[in-house]
Length: 162
Image (cartoon, rainbow, N blue to C red; front, side, top):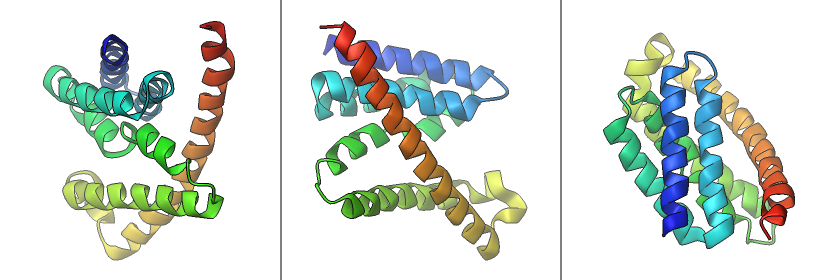
């Protein structure tokens, strides 16, 4: 429980920095999800879920600029939990299908919640096609990079803590 609270506090701290940093805030929000992954690695999937729930709630309560916590909740925060569960499946094609399904569900939720507010003139059908195609490509790159970060954590951080 204490480890989950520590990771949640670190996540909220990174989300706060992301909310006040004018450039690179999306990268910081993505990096904040590494604490959820660390919780999954160190204490299991329930701990990762707790970190996501606690940091999402605290982020919405504490951080004045809600864009970082919203981005964290919609895309990055829950993903380490999903990734951990999906990658237990032996079939790589099934893993990618489920990961892309999870991302596209999140993107669809974001599309309907935020399209007029954020997208404005790009909220039409051709704009949606571009956003979905580009989003899936960026998501694949994120997943690849996130996997590398997890391997780095396992190789360097977890190994040193033994």
